[in-house]
Length: 206
Image (cartoon, rainbow, N blue to C red; front, side):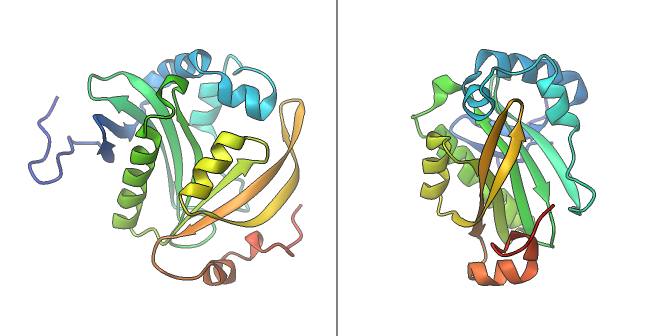
């Protein structure tokens, strides 16, 4: 392993770090590690879909891309690792989704046993700081209504709901999704909605 950069403290390939953990893109051969993480921590899947993770859940997440009508620049599936190399979480981030400067967090999952210790907050703050360094002006995500822990987490990170999307199918469950946005460059949410008409409450979606 290469030594960390003396100024940033980041080893080559690392995107950010916090509280003895770091993020780097997962390799294709590490998908089984992600599947094992899912199976050891089924709470998210049980809350959102009503069941545990499917046998190929990690591979599907690793391969999935935004629909063709939602253009984007790049996507990274970031493993969240302890500095000893243990995978403890994952965050999938889409850059410049729908408009330049809009970064979308499609998944942010941390091992259940690490909840409540400030690690999720610290890792998200580090992710956000990295995104800003890379030109992000807005952070966007969706959270399932009724996933109370996640809803509270994102409200506390200063995200604002811009619309509700109903009838979102997740396995055998139909969910309602809060689409949430956080300005990172001091602009009002109205400026975001001017750039991303899809997220206006009145916009008809297929």
